[in-house]
Image 1: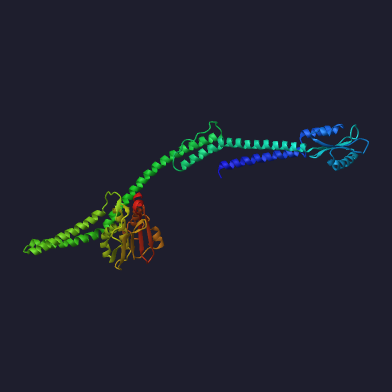
Image 2 (image 1 turned 30 degrees about the vertical axis):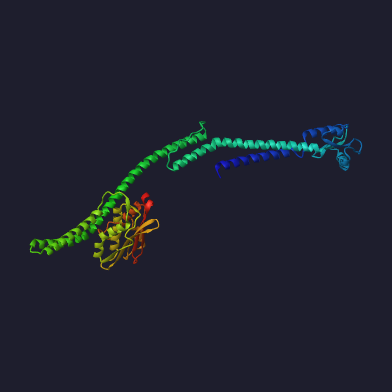
Length: 467
């Protein structure tokens, strides 16, 4: 229920209460007088004038008189009132016998007992016509109508005054407060200019709003500055992790390059010795070209992984998995771990930086390979797929898994389960940063002795581009 409606009901309740109080006071003051004042005056004249003619009266219907020095009652009135007048006559005799002054008036009539000493009648009863009661009721209805109209007018005037003086300014203050809460700068709230309590409240609010916006502008500037520093630091962490991963792969890359280099050197020496047939020369030249091509591919993989400026674009998530697997394959083979690529060869819909996503997948693969005890052998699976409106990249291993504490802290920055100097603690935190930076999320399922399954969930299509 709005404040305006509650105030209206409160004002109405107060005024109706006052109306009922006035009506009650009027009824108490009037007693049982349910005839008009004109009827009562005419009844008093009829009581004082023994020669009063009831046939000419508007309000008097009957009269019963008890003269002095007698108990006989004289009555005037219609025959239909005969029994009533006889009963009233007996009552007049009883009242007069008390020799006490007595006056009684109700809707039926007026009864008067005069002092014992004096002239005129000892007691008189004057009965009223129906017109006396109807006129009194009409007057009472008129009074009620005037009181009701006055109450309604009073309610309306009071509400209009409250609406103008209190409610409208409060609505302006509430609207301005809502604008401030929403982070917007509201227009200055104008007062009535009367310099009353409401004007002082509005002035205080305007000063408070100005100070809030001054603080907000200062805070926004500091937040933007801090955000820029955080983003720059995150970017440096991503680059640092990428370089760290490159260092981890350096030994394997050197070994991969060394093998074709050995073949090239051997073929070159044979060619230099001469005395080879044309067919052998072609064979050794083919060995040299094949080795150089292998070296070019290896070097290209490393170059693709190096930090560089990139524009977000749609990419094939399955191709990202394959490129990351190619870089991690030598490390897996060195630990006797089988690396398998699952899922379709093409998974479209992802949007972002494929190099960053390749780094994230490579981090997951290296972690998965290292989670399998050296020499035991095991299996690591990587692949991409569509799930509804999402693109999911998943890496799973059958390594040692993680306990609850490690699972809870594994994405914390610089947290590592490896010994000193063996790990940076950046791997999963960087993966989570890359996933969230692409509008996605990182999901980890693991248990001790049951291996680990990690999913990078990315929004696909327009949702991914918007992210």
